[in-house]
Image 1 (cartoon, helix red, strand yellow):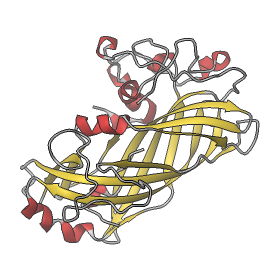
Image 2: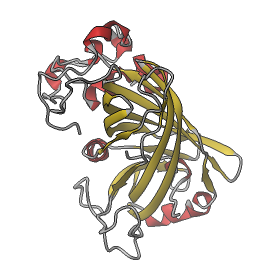
Image 3: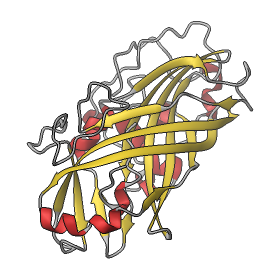
Image 4: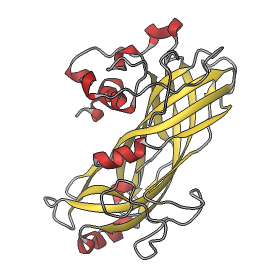
Length: 309
């Protein structure tokens, strides 16, 4: 596995497609069970005028079961550097579910992620252009992902959700990632003129006050095992695998100095996940859907102050 910085190990890359306004996005008979997000600064309220329409996927929901809806899922991904230093990254996902008995039709999209800050060592942030690349990808699957026809108390085991950014490969799940030395397959997906996708970086090796850029290709897969705690809450774990390749940087000399740290990273198994059903309170522009932008705006109210702006 190629790794480029201690805080990048947890990078995950799991839009919202076309839809129809006549398909409900939450159960009409249990709408009151959706998490309550009151208006106000702490609720992450956004100006609806700033959100373009993003209709719900036009899926057939006739005869759908009570788990049917849109969920926001937070994954807390932890890793260790040099065997002892713990770092953490969090992912925010949108998951659309249509349930019929044990069968689920699902669509998973990474809405955003926040990288940790290793004090006085490294601070990485995701530019909006990379966020747009993440939201432009999704994984859709159908199968018997519930252990029981009755959702509450059932185990939820969707198939692995693989994602690839910064590269275009004939076999995305298995071909080697491109590198700076072997560039075949590099893809400038964020259209900034640099290979792969760009991450903003401040590193002790470059001077923490100097903004730098790291260009990467990333392949990741999540394997979730959850329990339907209630029709509006899913809890469980996520085993994350990751393959990361550095394609270049704005300052090769200082980035190269970070290499020895990067070679001692280990992703920890069993990342914690929590998923909340979304409803009218999070549908800021009232288009019948909760988009990634609306999920990000409501994240602090749903999951706590970690997601506060």
